[in-house]
Length: 142
Image (cartoon, rainbow, N blue to C red; front, top):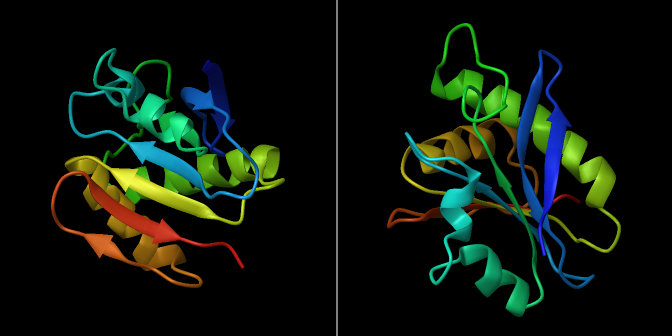
């Protein structure tokens, strides 16, 4: 159901997993919180990935820089994480954009703060955010 991802960031790579859904729906990109990795979103019996796939969405759950096989940052900050993940999402988008009208960021805890940094720096089109966990920031590519 899922495939492993290795995405280019310019200064290394970000790893994660991808589960493909139907065409015509946004790509959900999940960013986990502190001490969690991409598998946080695919826990058996409580899987966000499975729930999204059952509703037709494609889902990419990413390991933040320094987690699993993702390249660590020299100075791990929210903005640094956001920059690395933007580059990774751009790489992912170039590979998966066919049939997806845009990207929706889903962040848990620190991942939600990073999603807000991404929305603030790259917020083209419509953006919305939810403050209750998991935080969700929507970025629709024009």
